[in-house]
Every structure is written in structure tokens, then in C-alpha cells.
Image (cartoon, rainbow, N blue to C red; front, side, top):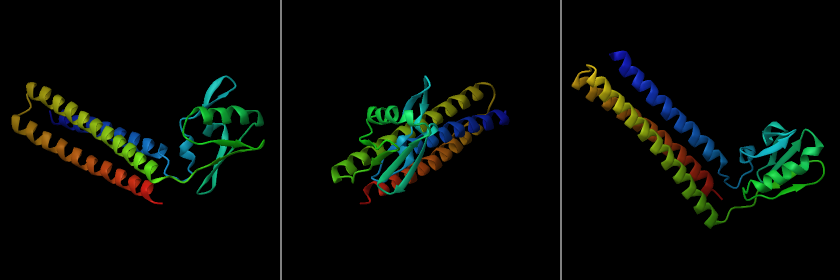
Length: 187
């Protein structure tokens, strides 16, 4: 019976790890006034009839804090990449010079910074909802195990252990959010 309890913990931890990974990915997409290749994550270009991420069809570099340079591996991809970046509606305008695409990152206004902080908090709340759902799922599994013979005391202690795990993951989420908010609010 103890193996099943441990399995519940492992499943819950895996779901929470996935929530943290997803949060990190989403926070990476929120631009904080600094050039970062991750801003272009999720943008796809038509590469020989296949939707392919820009990062897999070009070299992306950041020569300074305010510029992203996209150098396609094939010149015929310049225009489709430029259109894909514009269509992604990330608030940036690419400049095609015939060789590479330059993307200048404008300075953020105070209002925009506040909007980004709200977006960061929203992503954090989504992650917390995910870990609460993982807790609910683990507790449901523990109730099923109790019906199959797990003692009431062991069930209660297992639920407390699940809550401790939740608390640890909540702290991780809070730390990620705090770090991103600090980056966003730094002028």
C-alpha cells in the first residue's frame, strides 16, 4: 500500500514540475525591455511547406540589450520571417535590410511595465491553479486508496505531506514571479 502512496506523490510532483516548467516558458515570452531570443519563441515560418520555428531556420543573436538580429540560413526566408514576426503581434517591428532582420526593442513606459507585471501575476496564478489541481488529484487518489485498505492515519499524514509539497512549489512560483517582476520594473 505504501508504494501506491509514494506513486501518488510522484505523480503530483511531476504535475507540479510541469506547471513550473510551463510558467518559466511563459515568463520567458514576456519581454521586459531587453532583447532576448526567447521573444521569438512560438513564431513559425513556412519552411518548404512545413511550419517551423524561426529559431530552427535562422541564427538569432542579441548584439546589445536593445537589438535582436535574425539571420536566416537561406535568403529566401527573409520576407516570410519578417511577415511571421509581424503577424505574431508581439509588439515589435522587424527591419529587413536584405541580409538580416533587425528587431529593435523599444524602452518600456511605466504603464506598459504595469501591464506586464499584471501579466506576470496572471501567469503565476495559472501555475498555482495547476499545482492546486495536482493536490486535488493526489488527495482523490489517497481517498481511493483508503477505500482499498489504507488507514485513516496514513491518509491524513499523506495529505499533510502533499500539502508540504504544494507549499514548496508555491514558494518556487513566488520566487519566479518576484524575479520577473523585478526585471520588468527595472528601468
